[in-house]
Amino acid sequence: MANALQPSALDQLFGAARTYNEWSDSPVDDSVIRELYDLLKWGPTSANSSPARFVWVRTPERKAALAALAAEANRPKILAAPVTVIVGNDLNFPELMPKLFPARGEMMKQIFLAPGVTEVTAMRNGSMQGGYMILAARALGLDCGPMSGFDNAGVDKAFFAGTRIQSNFICNLGYGKPNTLFPRNPRLTFDEACRFE
Ligand SMILES: Cc1cc2nc3c(=O)[nH]c(=O)nc-3n(C[C@H](O)[C@H](O)[C@H](O)COP(=O)(O)O)c2cc1C
Image (cartoon, rainbow, N blue to C red; front, side, top):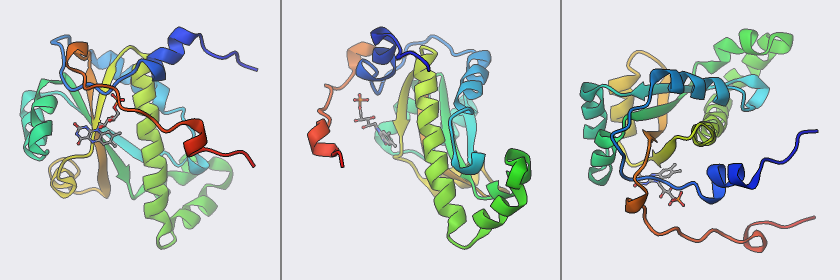
């Protein structure tokens, strides 16, 4: 059985972790992004379906293209962050089930191809993988700024043309400026959000 993480590690992932709006000039090396993917990929998904796809946008040209498709308030955040990742869901994910779930790949492929099941499975598991991405980034010492204020159809056209990948959310990554954080908003208490049965 694994031990609970040290309080400082829990704080880095949750208690002291914030959503950043402004970014220092410190770059994020491609090797850190690869390390980040190699952590988040281990997070569980339905039958190991792993429907999320990630585009790590870091060139000025592609940053500008992405920012142009974002809500006005989100544009400067995208332009200033060293990396903005587009988290998408690949609706073709069932095709990879024989590789990802060898024991019952063909069966799971057919289940996930059923009408309505593809989309809901992709959104459920792709969003979970997006959450794993945020926690993996924090675990590696990166700061995050997730955002959904952008034109999904426009981003799909500009970044996922010729595929069945649909953008879910985007997330700025880098080293945030703590002096520009908004005040922390309250969370629901245990009794407000949970119950035992
Ligand atoms: C899926 C998602 C979409 C969000 N969209 C936006 C956005 O479009 N623009 C923005 O400035 N913040 C956005 N946020 C940031 C949230 O407002 C922020 O994470 C939340 O208030 C918690 O802040 P905290 O982590 O500092 O406590 C988004 C966050 C998530 C997870």
